Image (cartoon, rainbow, N blue to C red; front, side, top):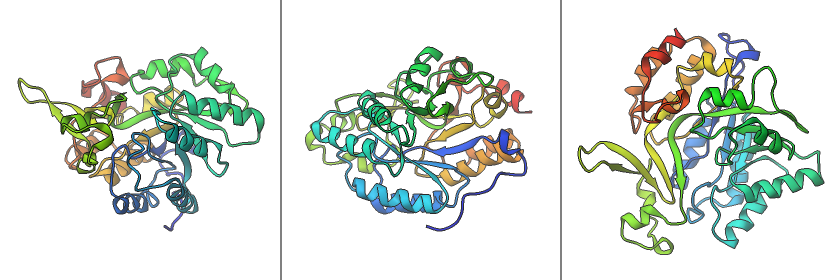
Length: 335
């Protein structure tokens, strides 16, 4: 991989840029597909890339050594790289892998669950000079008091839970008075694009759908590049997506038109969750709207025609049901 990270866009001062984070790939893509995807990401406007298997350890085409090699390539291309741990651990082998990730010093780590948080906090206490860690979206932090507690453990970035509205995010870590920790002011990141990760279970629902046991699943999720879509029984409307042990929304959360609200809320980072088709266009459009002054309405229309795997919604950001698409109020903010 070659190339340098893009410089600040002329349309937005550096102090007002909204940086893009490419979240971890949540699906089981073949190794060759993953490497090709990240070669494109290396040339994209994204500043940060989160790597690693966060859903199921049986998806093992990429070992930790492979993720580290990929991380070094992306870092050489100018990206800030974060290694993520699984959101639900169910075996001693998974715990060992989590410890290996959390205890390495080469790259920052995103805590996927409380066990990773425990290891990262202990490491930060023993070695304050270590890289500060990231609080992943599945760590239950919904208010300022909880964020203060976690910041004191050594966290520098907080990825807010996906269902927390923007005003709730701002209340927890306000722009005028951000939470402080040993690593400095905590930065806020929100989930800005992709199928919403709603729940995890010890049971693999993809395997169950195919009438297979979890430990002999035939790796069926390899056939679902964007998860297995479920529809309602009555009117056959897209409802949920099965992704192994993870349940997701069928629609795609998209905060493309909320740039003004994000800045007012002190949110300087937005996470875009990869999908199999059209993701390079997603990155381009988000950067154009957030940082180059492009019109949000036109960008939304372009994305709706980009072959994405679902409709675009934004209800959670505005204290509404997540599957609502509040187009008129949102576009009014961007105009």
